Figure 1: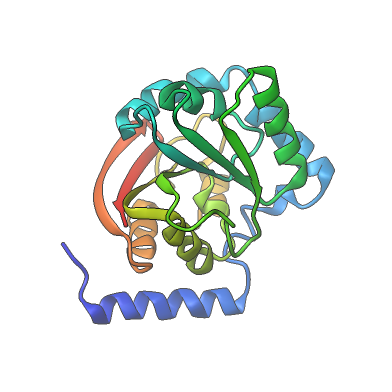
Figure 2: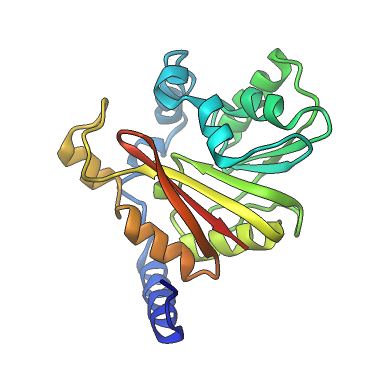
Length: 227
């Protein structure tokens, strides 16, 4: 069901007020503030067991990634998804790997070098802007990252600009109400500020058209939108 203009305006106004009041994902980002914090996080992000936990090949197939596409990996972290993206889009495609942390980008660059990936461009974003070229992306992928975005209104406006007309957005995140293998129920609710429907409404308020949603894992969902 489409939102009316009043509802969209109200959501945008609320988001703006939250952003002015402070960083909306402050609790989720408590463990990322120092280089030492991020080193600990990187161990988990690059854990080989994450392949089974995340199922990246199946995820990209479900989203509909095809050869020749240009993808924005928003919040690439240590570059976990880069080899799978590069394989899915083939040599004629391109990935923009974006992150706001230099140390994460360095690790992602090392992954690309290790796998001999030639079609990856690395971009340093900031908390308000992903800094990707305008109208450049067929798909923006935000995997396990949306709940870390401190300024969603500004950040998603920059993602919107980076998408081509008709370009797609895929947001994969955690249910607050479903058991997670590495987070207690209390920590999950503190870490993830909104559940699926809350994030969906927030993103729609930024002008994205909702397409569909489906489960990726028992504790994760996918939200698909179009520009």
